[in-house]
Image (cartoon, rainbow, N blue to C red; front, side, top):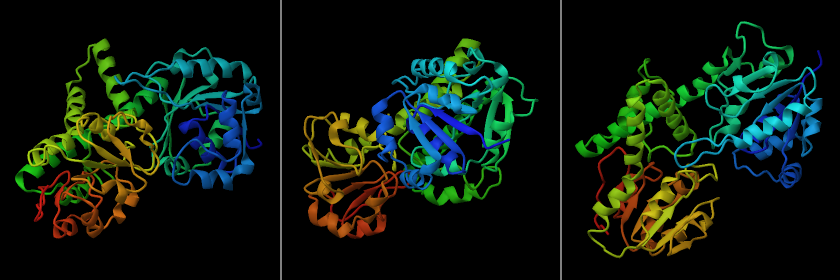
Length: 430
């Protein structure tokens, strides 16, 4: 058979990254979105998504890509992915209305033998209920990780595929698309695949919760969690790629959604899920680590400090602020002036009566009593302790993710606070 034509319906984060990754394998791709202005901007090379390597990859394989706001153009495709992002609310509840409307629009446009695959994350039971021929309907677990989306889309670890009948071979067009990535393919029933994505995220949260819990203990007893983590990665039962870096709770929306989904399903089906509830509680406590430190280490010495905050995105290499620990902290610091800098997120995302946008990290630090690094953007690693000392009034650096050199900061007179280790006290505190 000739090479299949692949369609992606929904050109938000997931759809756009996935479309470019398939095009990079030499396949012809049609990207559809009902938003004509979005389609026009993408076609002109102005991508609405920040991901390392995405712009370059889209340019290199532009000949394989076409974009349209006419749903009928998907009729030329052998396989169409439903790939729009699924928004979540503050309770981790997915809003599936947009996905359902997209599916309703796409199905009539498909050719008589075309395959339909739901790529966006949906709760168990969603795919099987769709009004489409089960022999041509699939669900595929997405691999999107903000900040690493291109890497994971181009070089996936495996494909998890939900099918009506996992024992049947995949159709030739679908097998050709997945085969272009040269990785294991795991077919299973729809519900298993839908739950597999949630299971993966629950395991990630479990690792993060263990790291956060023991990092907190390390801070209190004089241990250093970052010395311990390499020993765990050398244990074959845990592994070299284990997620053992402590953080400020869970953010971004996807992990929160999956925990909320498990809790809802457990309650509805009479299953015991107290460990998941404990993960949620642990995340809430860890999110406020910086706020507790400020009340313990800063405010007792200076009742009217000025804070500088570096980073608004919930993690580096993304413009997403969904459940951002930085924004949560700012909301709790309404009584004090704050100077803010983020490489890609504007202060329009900030709700604070006395916030000042700075043009750079060093300008954000100017005149501040405490520097709080809330997002580990790579550019922050170039900050010089001497430069910070020359512009700051105080000598407190809160660096949860160990962006800066702790010993160099202490030598410059700073008190340094990071996750998983005892404080390093400088000669001059705030």
